[in-house]
Length: 93
Length: 318
Image (cartoon, rainbow over the protein chains, first blue to last red):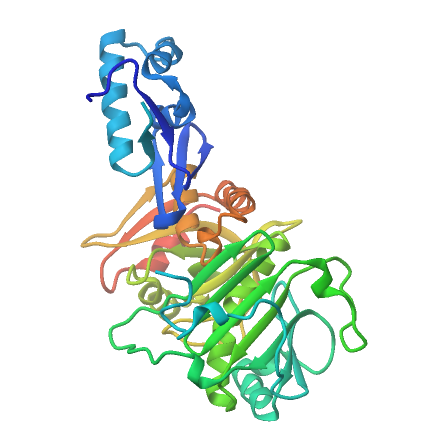
């Protein structure tokens, strides 16, 4: 099923991260990988708690970025899929 | 792969606690940052091998972080074809211990206070600490010393973490103004850059592993006896203020590009041997590395073969 506003993601169990001046340093311990995500990537990691839906992400971030909701939704869905592909998130709904 | 299966025929028989048959009754203390470290249960030949390897760092008697050395049957260990092979220890992490296996070695580090209970021959440390156990079939000094060194690298990584420092896979080159810590995976050019700096008057602390500790004067690089292809450099300073972090990249032209603290932290994390795979010590490691990353400027240094690495480093403002 394609992701939409009702989709839910959570961080994978082996993902640890630390925010440093807006960016997020992400450690995937099982793969011994270290990544750096930009500010929106860091925000997505915060929001991907396995409970909040994409619609909640949009509500949380719409005031932070000068972009319309449709574009923000599309970007967040793409970003979540990328982070899933990178092994940082897993989709739970 | 199952823990230790690469190195042991029967990983399930990995020692569950620090016990076994000692090689002998000799002991040697080695004074390096985080220590002194005491290795006991050695045979005379093993002691001689360790003293040859660590030279003037060895002390007679004394107390410190205790590791007991035990004999293990050679038949426990697999023969490993090391041609074209990169040596990585097999590791297993738990809240109160770390177990690891490698070529002709089984090791464990325990934090349980009961294991540091003083005995008549092992006076207590001021604070509860870690303690090590090393099992090996290598009784001959020259073969035992590298086994002990591989164990020692892991032990010192955890001990430094415990005492407020961190061990980093790095090269450190220094002048009177401070030390530059060169980071990058194997093949990134740490030894090459160290050699280039040395040719131009820089002092190399180590081209493989260095300690960063914090003192009243801020972050300091401490020399360790763990070196790479460049080998030991005797003499020179033992502790130098950290001046900058450099992530090395080989390229066709020289460039020095600023790194954000987050990216510096990412490179430091990748350069933290053993502990960066340990889920039970990750918070303290991240906290420590962030402190390092925030303490000095960080850059990516792109350099060609034969480049003016030392001149570029020295141009970095204090």
